[in-house]
Image (tube, rainbow, N blue to C red; front, side):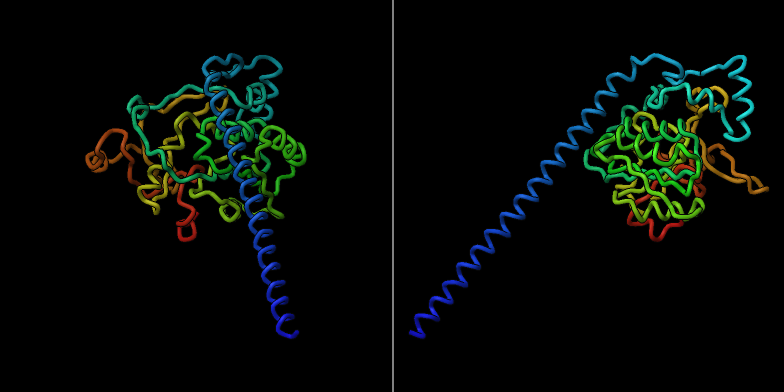
Length: 314
């Protein structure tokens, strides 16, 4: 009798073990397969949005489209002039332009012919802002999403450094949720005024992409802006990059290329300035569109590997 009870107990434990294994296997299969399906659906949505914008961009018409200038007259011009000191640019003209406006591809023709690896690291684009005006902030976010291949754009983080403009509160939250329901754009807010560097550190801590890209909150990313930087980071994960920066006219919001390459530097007064490429660097480069080595980057736009950001001064 005792031997029979021992067999029954062992049998019961075997049955319980099998049932537990079946339950655990079913749980993980269901959840992981569900996540996989959701990821595929999200990527499909992002690819569709990216392709639709690219197909329509060249056909768009309206104020400021194709990067054209917006010229104000009369009372509107007077109002814009009165707000210029506060905003440092023509906010009235900016508000008249679509948040996802089209801009011309001003790249050097040789840049358009470069083929980049398909397998590149993913990017977390971090946009720091404090009391930025509505239209330039969102135009920056739209330009990043619309002109970044979805397979490489991991996320866009709007890092709010304790803004107190009313429209940057719940209105901004609702706009982001409605415009990008797939969650590609996120809002993170500091609990107190941090300043640029600490805000960047907060953004870097929250980011989960392979590469960190810091942008000002009043710029527009152009076609093909992302791949060259990611390819350079793939070559050397310790590199810190700064892209060639085009111009947006502060009075008319006209978009245009600089027509030349330059490097950052300082005057003796320690004011930042753009300088011609040194002769020794021109000789070193393999071509006119090869990366340029220099020791000073413009603070508004930087790109570095997330793994190296712990040791590099942001």
